Image 1 (cartoon, rainbow, N blue to C red):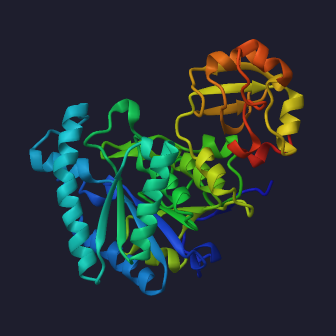
Image 2: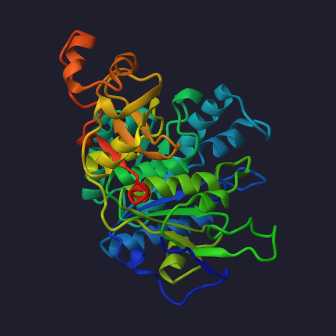
Length: 392
């Protein structure tokens, strides 16, 4: 595995090819950048500079989708809600009010560049249920074809705790995967991933490039930084996993400057998470991007080797099943020593799967009373983690 390169927090001299070659870009911007930390008002000048950058990219023939937080932060100010955590009903009310202000701001700024802004509100099911995923993807791709500027946000007005993403880092990665984006930009209050929290250690170094997300990389990630921002560095690394699995490069860059996208093009300091050169197919991309697996399938060593040799998962190679899942839902495929090998769409409900694990395919009909599929998870319905291929 190539080691991540360390870099001092200063500007380079030129943009990376991953940026200059990207034709379709998803940009995520958080509440801490959009809303003034003290007053909760919209940072209008900053947002105008971002839309200037977007217009420049459009004129260069590049497509941009924005994933924008900020509705709750703006709405709480309009409603006079106090600082500090809000309960679910207050958050939904704030989102309902703030979403209107935010949409108007985007529409007005985009119109100044001859662009039409479009609002897309997504819930968890829109990326986890295949039909809704395809519908959302088609809408986004049609908007891009029509030269509009899609602005995506989670539908905070209706999403409950159990059915929400909870942060726009992972939502943006899922959107990038959905539309086959070349590059995902996470604009943050820091200019990348550091070996230690900036300011906490004199020897903290920014990582210039990450080519594999190891446990060491994950350990460097911190938690949420402010009450305006749900996502911290930990969710950004999780977003990088989703993006890389989809063949999409990701960059964490500072949003605490005017024209932040132009700065990336000028070689500003940032951290790049580079995708493997062999992106998975669209269906496997969707599977690898599933947010909430319903259970886990524990496989033996022989099954593990067979999976990475391109074979389907048969009941005979399974030692244990856990969780509560139905036929057609996503599960984690896990090794005996606890490694997550990948994810798959299971062909049997949990109770049925538990009855046939360790059995031969010829025994399935007799055990269950009907002739189901030979495979517990077909190879076309799974997305394996490439980093574990050599370990198997």
